[in-house]
Length: 261
Image (cartoon, rainbow, N blue to C red; front, top):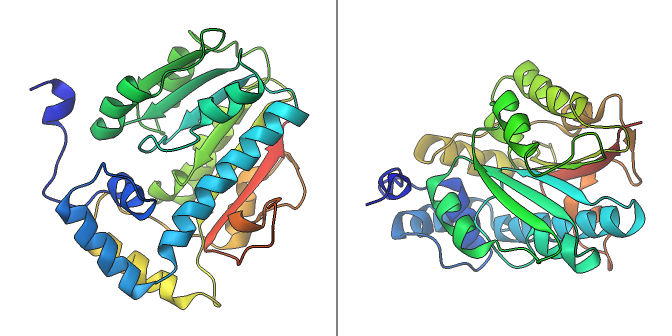
């Protein structure tokens, strides 16, 4: 058994594997499917949220590569590989795009090394690190990315696992401070909202039974992550409402894209 395999805990549901289950993936265990079904009972639309977040990733990466000329992506909290991963979307537009994935989930790392293979012209790399390990991430990412040039920092559904507000804002700020002007922040986050009370019940169930525990924030609190950045239209909105091809119902995942001047 490898070191990575020994770190995989199949006795408790894990967010990356449940997310994989909701989006139709096969990289999950009975404990994940059971928890996923229970959460879906509490909040029937949760599976659509997972899919909407994935589609937002694709639209954001495509926009940055096509319209903003971004050729470097630092994707922290990668999650299990699925269709249209960051490098696939970016390298479809620009084959020379470089992508560094970061995650601390051993199952994600095992699959990433096997499946996330980039184009010959570009480059794809994978780091085993926690979001909070800012210095480690930046030092290792610099071996693949040129941090003196613009980078898209991808933080989809990951700062929800940093409970303390100031710590979470500080981590994002430190990462963005280290990136060159013209870099972009792409962030999505589970929201708590008076119009979506069933989301709170689903999150409470998850935090009682699953790992790692997550923190909801209001739309206003999520917008704070973009302080000091130029928000691209339409601002911080439901991820399904960020430049969709067709109108889609709002989901309890809010997202935005901001540019560093």
